[in-house]
Length: 601
Picture 1 (cartoon, rainbow, N blue to C red):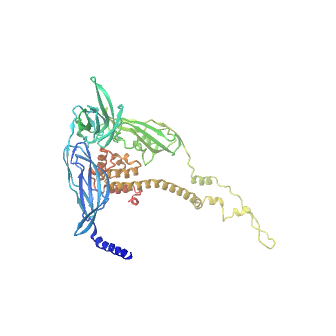
Picture 2 (cartoon, one colour):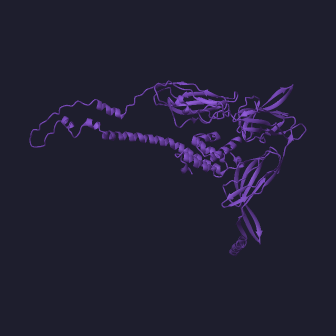
Picture 3 (cartoon, helix red, strand yellow):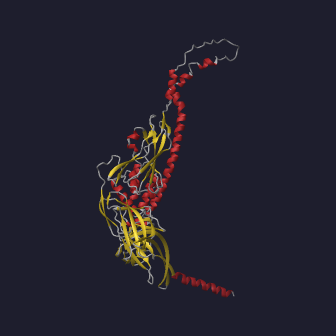
């Protein structure tokens, strides 16, 4: 029995020594970058998966890829995977470990024809790797001749930056329609779109995406010439941002349709194009205070307190109401340039602060003013200069005035207190002479206490009038007050500094993911105290930037606003200057030396 056990142990040992060396492990050392699309033939309007595979390397950097205009690409996510493959070489088993990173995109086909997506590149250390190009064949689905799309504008000659409503109506030829999309509609970069409430009513509503914006469409039915027809309607505000002739549309709708005794099929319908003529605002009649506002507005002013002393702080609030996108309304009116305010009030140098988040059709701003004279009996109306596109002339909109009661105050200073002593000097009295007399052996008695207080070595009244004594006695309270002010200011600034540091950390992560526009909104929004989605290209006016940097940042933000605030990688489709976020940070740091930028890097 023992012999059998020993033989078994010897056999197992010899087997391991013989077989184990024949299995070898290897790590794949070649680095490759490969791109592929989920389908090679698609309909216009279809969205498919596009993937880029990185093998043999590890990195947190996104590939660089420029999608053509006929494709809209959106970065979704990335993932890491590891695979093992086994093969036999010269009688030995060899296992190879392959690491792979997959970068996942969703692409929407916008135009028909052969589409070539160029090679993607990625840099790892000193080396740059390039993928293959990908070709996709796209075709338009069947034209739905029983449908039509109508575009309605109040007029086609518009002023620069004027916002006008565009009503879109889709007359649906067959109610057995589903899976409709407007993503293939075309809009020029010279026109900005803003979704607004339609004012339409119907039994059903849908959320649609067009040019990166979400709109609410209403479905109802109406009767035309005795025939009941279904229609879907929504409204956009169109704002031209370049002077000249521009084309609006077409708006294309791609959908699935089912008919009796037929298989469901893919179909489309598109509108006619609309030609726009954009003219500049007139120079004649432009007020000196005009700052770019266009349209009609209502201003309502309010004050935090109406009975004050001269110099007391008053929080002044102005609510501006108008039609979105409220072009030119980026801050409160410039009351620091209005003589009605500057002659009677001291306006806070910080300017207006906006209440966030914004509400549709409303902007609320706050600032602090202080009355300088007791004769003031009201806060004057706040004035906003705007261009009225209906009349073709400039107008000044005014808020209500606010009655206030201002009381005069008398400041009593230390000099006043000292002067009171000088004006009423104490009457001189004759010093009482006390003659010492000998007493019994022991300690001599001292003079009366009154004589000691009147001794030349200490005079209470003269000490009170002494500048040195005054400075000594006032140093303690002054230091206490200064410390209290410093602590409160540090606490207040600390919150802002922490918020900016957090925003900078988030912005850097977004920038490394290719979301440059969102990173800039996050960082600059924290500095001016607004949410990232509320920060627009117009808010760059709050920063002093050189012309090249301002142009680069403004162009990026405007392009992103055109397609909606991108939270995914659709910014990857636009070339972004390298290091733009860090260049912007350095410029802002020079302007705001108090910001915690160096510590946040």
